[in-house]
Image 1 (tube, rainbow, N blue to C red):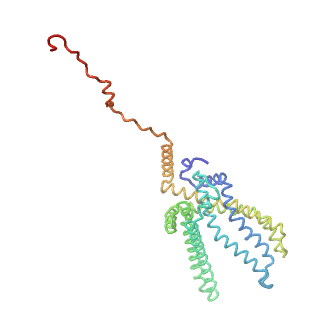
Image 2 (image 1 turned 45 degrees about the vertical axis):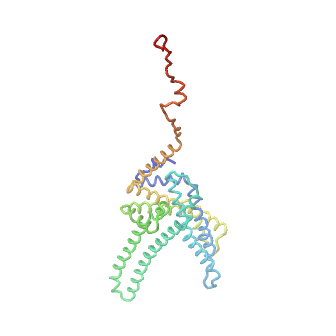
Image 3 (image 1 turned 180 degrees about the horizontal axis):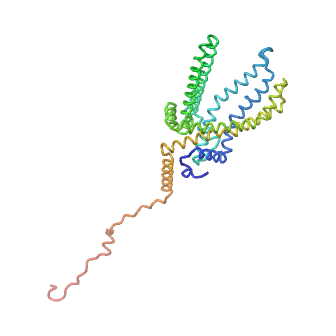
Length: 348
């Protein structure tokens, strides 16, 4: 990995996509290992069991054939609701550490999220996201239902209900997408900055101001690429399963296993892409708005100076310099001059 101080720079959409490919290549094993925790079990529930029981569903035969299908579907949804925030947090942590050129592991990334303070906040953010999505879809569905009811009751009123319903539908779609985009960085803030839930929502809303179109373009492009690649990979086995179901037969066991393995592999390999794009967008916005690259450089220089000071040889204690000599030495070295006695008459 390159030094973080050289990598930190404002990035355009093309730069973020280039850096996404670079991070994906250099952290492939780490990111795929984290994603496999979610997508391998989920593929077993959502693809293998669903395809195994779906062709045999027959309500006329009683609940015996329907219950396994409902159970597999419920387990898959529950798995995504509980495990997805956990894996998302670990993925965000791992990508952030690798982007900053810090060493990390799969276990260390999961340990970062292994506290209710982090996991609970991510789970709450997921609940808010689902609530906004369901509210948007509920408004759209309600408008469509109302138009249908009005059309059956009075055809004349339908000419007024359709334009009003269209306006309400577009408003619900725009409002829902707007809220979701403004909160797109919520997981990054929770995991990287360890902010409280209220502060995380407020900060995500503030950071995204002025970056809505860039975020929309990046997420739409990454989602489109992931969806296209995933569809192309599973299309052959999916077609074979569909043909078996149309003919009324039960799919072969080997075909179910092969389809499950292909689906699990593609989901696991492609899952990190959108997360990488999101975390790179987060750091790009912080660099542009807060000078995060300069802050990181200052912290690194400070850490290096502290380390250099700690390892530098310490000066020895200096001896006190004095101009006074010991008394014995003074007595020995400085003797009064002996005056010989005078001779002659004056001596007396």
